[in-house]
Amino acid sequence: MKLRCPVCGAQLERREGFYRCEANHCFDIARQGYLNLLPVQQKHSKNPGDTREQILARRAFLQAGFYAPIAKALCGLAEQYAPAGPILDVGCGEGYYSVQVEKVLRQPLIGLDISREAVRCAAGTYKGPAWICATASHLPVEERTIGTVMSLFALTVPEEFHRVLRPEGLFLQVLAQEDHLLGLKSIIYPQLLHKPKQIIPAVPGFQLLESRPVRFSFTVEGQQVQNLLMMTPHAYRIGPEGAQRLLQTQALTDVASCRINCYRPISSFTFP
Ligand SMILES: C[S@@+](CC[C@H](N)C(=O)[O-])C[C@H]1O[C@@H](n2cnc3c(N)ncnc32)[C@H](O)[C@@H]1O
Ligand SMILES: [Zn+2]
Image (cartoon, rainbow, N blue to C red; front, side, top):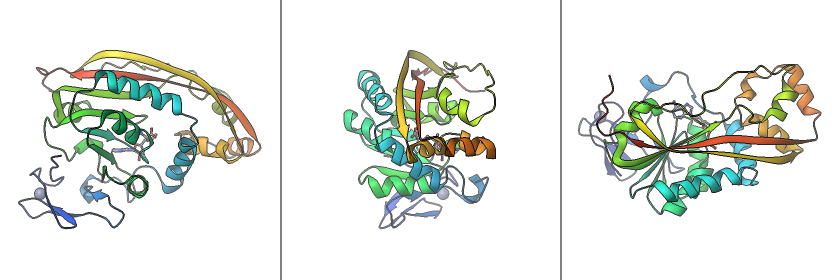
């Protein structure tokens, strides 16, 4: 796996306990086993990305298996389309999906997230993969070295994904569909706004191979109701009344609805 310096772009060499480039920029491997490649100039806040509370809620929810159908479909598509080569999971969170894809593809895994809490949690749970704190906007990865880039309920940066992928590479994207978690939304918001959403977006520099919908219902109870809220962007948007209504909700049956989009990079494409 070839990493590059997030400050000057030179190749990073691994030393005992740290990485270093030829210009002597040094990056420590944290005690917990993750590598911090997020320089202050690429941070827009002190602790960017998901908070510890969100990460722990997501882990509790995912580990309980509520979204196992998404992981299963993702692994099936990865097996079908992925070439050999390292996997890069951008916005990996606590690594639930990353390690399952690693297991079926049997390729080296890099899990990358801008949240230090996310990669700390992932590194504490799963030994072996490289867990890196960095931003998707400046991937600290060499050109054309990655077999599969994944972005699951996270952001897509076409130019960066195209740059790091090998020509025969695969980009796997999971996006929520419009009817995702309508049950939760109808409890926390006084009225639901209909916002049409482009769920098979045209990604510049990529050609769509397949777009597979995944839709299923599930029931959460007790603390898992709160965990479900905490792992979604609604955790930031909810008002006090919505929060109160959800606190009074003992059990919730909802529908998860997303789409897994599989793309290949277009080799001849140049970004403006
Ligand atoms: C909704 S979570 C999805 C996590 C994981 N992929 C999953 O599906 O369980 C989005 C993740 O993207 C991360 N994130 C947000 N902005 C980012 C950026 N600029 N670069 C890398 N990761 C980012 C957040 O910290 C968070 O962990
Ligand atoms: Zn450097």
